Image (cartoon, rainbow, N blue to C red; front, side, top):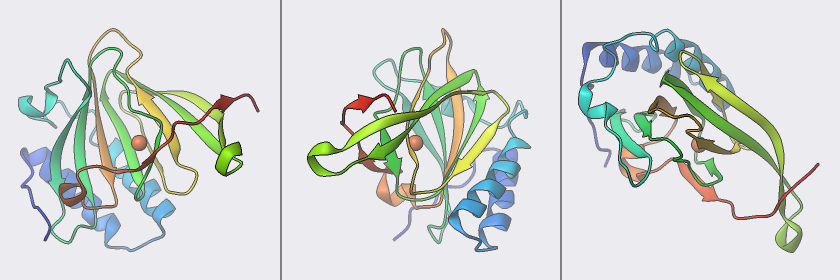
Length: 183
Ligand SMILES: [Fe+2]
């Protein structure tokens, strides 16, 4: 059974409608992510997008607020709040993902997996800083990354996943604890 949450603000409700229009096209995961990222970018400058409760962080770890889970489980929207220094583990995802920065700047390191078994290792593929107002989308495979707040202030980002996060609790498929080597 899916867990449904109603969008907390009219702007969030509009965002959910915009995402639904794209998801219902049933394009490939990569194309869905690209199109959803385009839609999300249109909302990132809206000052009343998130209510105060979704802007609250946690001193212990980055915080995930579940904003919306579609009734059929086809997508979910979360607001992530990062205090300075907080980061994810290195991970990949159960489905296509879109990340858009609402406040501050999100630092992201992307990796390629090389080898297998005892020779498995990660190679840094890109170091990027995702600025407020920008969104990017990606889909498995090749979606291994780490996200962190490298700045001095709070970072808030909107992430959209092609999965039922209300049911799964997380978008993470696997965490990676492997050597990181130069290419
Ligand atoms: Fe991620």
